[in-house]
Amino acid sequence: MRLMLTSLFVLAASPALAAGDKPFFSLANTDFVVTIAFLIFIGILLYFKVPGLVGGMLDKRADNIKAELDEAKALREEAQALLASYERKQKEVQEQAARIVSAAKEEATNAAASAKEDIAKSITRRLAAAEEQIQSAQASAVKEVRDQAVNVAVAVAKDVMAKQMDAKAAGALIDDAIGTVAEKLH
Image (tube, rainbow, N blue to C red; front, side):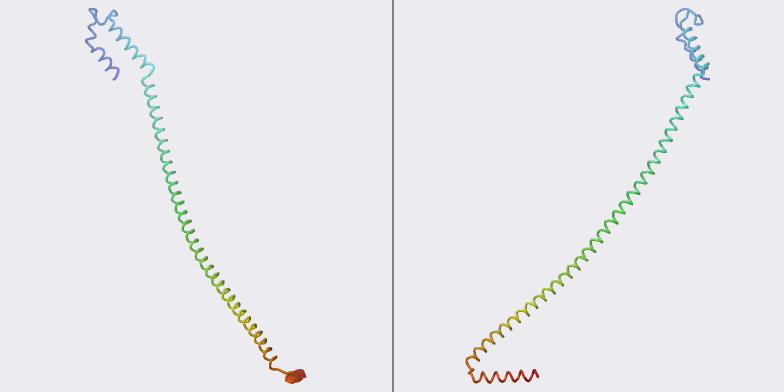
């Protein structure tokens, strides 16, 4: 069909027939020779099946393009699946990080409460130790004051007795003390 249309258009080109005064169907007419050469060229192309080869090459190229598009589509789907996987992993990591942070906060709160309790216990122990030291110091001071008072009282009594006592009263006191000792020992 294409061949017939091409031939018809070539023959219908009437201005090309005006190539001088020579008849169109003569070998002396260059237009006729060019038309014959063109028809032979078309015939050779058809004989060697060049349009089929060109069509086959175009079909092969279309198949290659289709295969590349299918591969690109598969790669895109794989990339989308990989992206979704990474987004899930990122979400899981964020959730895990949030759990770690909340556990750390809870642990810190517990540690702070434990530290407060330990400090309170330590303060209570120190206060008790300080109160014991105060009581011990107070008892020691009272004892020292009593001892000092006893020493002062003994010294005063010794001075008073030394001034008031004569030899006869001292002898009677010694005899009395010996008797008391003898009674208690026996």
